[in-house]
Image (tube, rainbow, N blue to C red):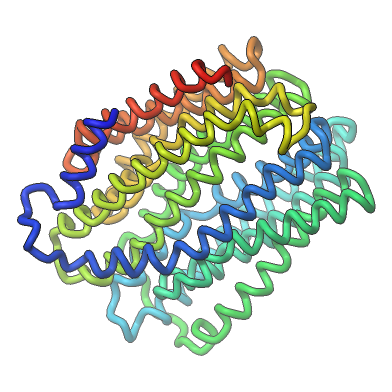
Length: 460
């Protein structure tokens, strides 16, 4: 692992065959974009720790399972309606001339809002139908609160994606940290007042607060922009195809909670799976969003250059560095989980330790997933990413069907790891110039070493 990882870091940091003395036009952008994001990600990681530590301990496994399932449904549904998410805005808006960016952003935002409005209407109708037809399985109060949180979250996402595309990354970087902090406070307060329904209401409170903040920030640059600006060619096709890849990826990384809820039929095991996935995703999202924050600057700097190799070199650099950091973070987590989990989460969550350790083994794969996403965006080839994420979700689904009925939450974590490993392996075939053999070997070896470490420490 150390040899492969060292070679990958060295090759990426020097830009392949480039002389160390040769400057890269994108390196200042790399430092600026990543640096402006780190404080926001630090807040987000702190809030995620509270979300996966304080909330489960207070709610207990069964009620936390209900809360986490609602949170997962809101998160995955919001992302599935993103029509390409922040990557769409970040890839196309900075590519137009500076004087036209706000006008084009306004046009694209209006078009995306219409599409998401249609999807929201369909989902609201489905949710109400399920609650009316099977109230014991889909409690109406829980369903309505989750729907309210989803509607507000979609609105907030639109506003902050526009800010990112206009290269105002600070607000976007802090969005999830602020939202998760409010979620923790509102969920714990709500649980004390109204039980699990109050906790789920905390999701709507947090989404509403962030929506109000995002609308206030986006109002000035977008309302004053001229209307009717033409959209860049191919933007909607890119968004639609990229959204499919996003949906596949999110189902691979978040679907373990839903799979355990359906195949294991236990709210306690669902809570265990949600805790394991939440811990792993706290680290993965920090990595993914570092890449996303870098994209607008790379596009703006190279918008007149048909060759994307310089920007891809900067992405490889970030990929190698984040892979090393992800492995180190996950190794510490795997070693500490058997000792810390009963203290932090309570003895009632001791059964979640194997799932948590296995889920953490996914972290070294997250940088390669981000590399695939941003390379597909730079090259305007989102269909290649769909192949990779489609293979991943297929591997996840097959593994979940086989593993979850026998191993419950631990089986869900195994399915998550299998899906992620297959996805990044296929990404290597799609983007061999960016995800080279050494980088893939380092990521897969890192995951294998983490599993071995988990066995040695007694986590699994």
